[in-house]
Image (cartoon, rainbow, N blue to C red):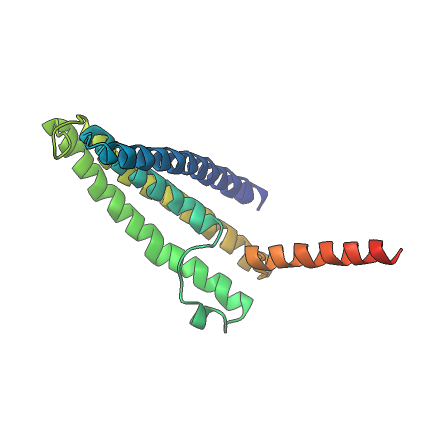
Length: 195
């Protein structure tokens, strides 16, 4: 079991690294948009910056997929999910990752890789022709879904261990955790004021 958990931790660390790169891409994107807004204000149009902002946006979104799955902050139907027991949630999450997310990622990797290789062979550039090496942009799709599939494997491994150990507890939601921290700090302040 420890070896499986170690593998899951390594896969989780890849998602963490991807999320950090994604946050850097977000800051670069913000600066680019600010620069583009200033440039447009002075009637200066730079299509290279425009294309680069598209690259940053794609990188930011695609790299954040795996981290979102790791932190369990993805979109799901909570109306149905909330009424099930923890055991049913763990088993359901295992099945969803095994039969939906992982196969979808593999399909996206296969077709994304085909498009990337084709773009590389053609020497494709951006639509306005200003930025060469368009295959790099298309490779972001492959990279994003490789990371998502690895994170899905990590979730499958962790769910398998939970089922094997009959430990069905779910991780505490961030909002719940933050609320508890605030309540604890308010209690501490109240105790200090009483003394």
